Image (cartoon, rainbow, N blue to C red; front, side, top):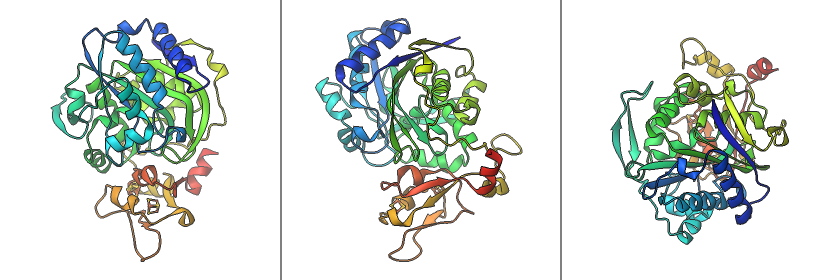
Amino acid sequence: MSTVALVRCNSYQDEEVDTAVRRGLILLGGVERFVRPGESIVLKPNLLVGREAERAVTTHPSVFRAVAQALSSAGARLLYGDSPGFGRTEGVAGRAGIARAASELAIPAADFGSGETVSFPDGHLIKQFTIAHGVLDADGLVSIAKLKTHGLTRITGAIKNQFGCIPGALKAEFHARLPNADLFSQMLVDLNLLLRPRLFVVDGIVAMEGNGPQNGRPRPMNTILLSNDPVALDATICRLIDLDPRLVPPIAYGEAFGLGSAKAIDIVGDPIASFVVPDFDVNRSPRATAGRPGHVSRIARRLIVPRPVIRPEACTQCGTCVRVCPVTPKAVEFKTSGSPPVHHYDRCIRCYCCQELCPEGAIEIEVPPLGRLIHR
Ligand code: SF4
Ligand code: SF4
């Protein structure tokens, strides 16, 4: 039986967040369960891109601050970092308010820009990862994620957050090598099995729904979730947003590969019924796995799998989508000067990197008509 602490927190006022985080840790048995005095612990917030905290793209600095203070009071020596989807860590952390919180608490930045290859023979799919030096050099990792929608994995919470422990452009290589949600999720689970974060905290005070993880709408959920089991935590998020956890591949593979439990969960703290948001805007269409596990046929991809679509009126032709598309030749490119780029759906692997990182929110994910029909 895994335990998830679900704690009400109605605002980002430092004092209220601090109280909520400390209560959550007590519900899990006390902060001493997770760190010992003198250990170096790296804090991993979600720093996808540089956006103000109010946009709900990144972990809010008050949640980062509260977790840091709790771990620090137990004697941990802290560092922090993330490898953003776009931009440099310092700039992203600065705009998100995390750098300031870290500076006020004298928490130095860890090296997330370079890494080292680590063998992982126990991996179910991936036997070798390159991990940021900042993570490898620390005694332990604490994940401080944000509750958001995600094009590929439907939600991003506890499990997905560790993807930022892979430095820089190597992340894009995984997207290209693992061209569907099943394979990509198996990799995420292997990554978590390798890194084994001590504690997972998810900032759900204001979540993001709709066109996440960068361009969705902030949605107050008034909660912070804490657990040492990321599968149980993400399955609890599914209950909060009334989403079938079987539609979230990282949860399914997390349970199958022994990362945690999606079913045997003891939720402690505040009653879950008071937080449930049944109309949360998240992709509830069926999964499009066909044939052997992890394989999506070309026909299924064309007819069922949601695809990225550019809204020309919102596109500034910045070219970010073209730069981040991980396939060769590019599946999105400029065709006509002065016009938005166009997608080549026959090449597109549906990794949604373009949608995730478009700074204008000009790319949306569209479920093809057959997919909508099956869902109904
Ligand atoms: S990233 Fe977005 S705004 Fe930039 S070119 Fe692509 S669709 Fe247009
Ligand atoms: S076009 Fe977008 S969704 Fe398709 S492969 Fe490129 S980045 Fe991924």
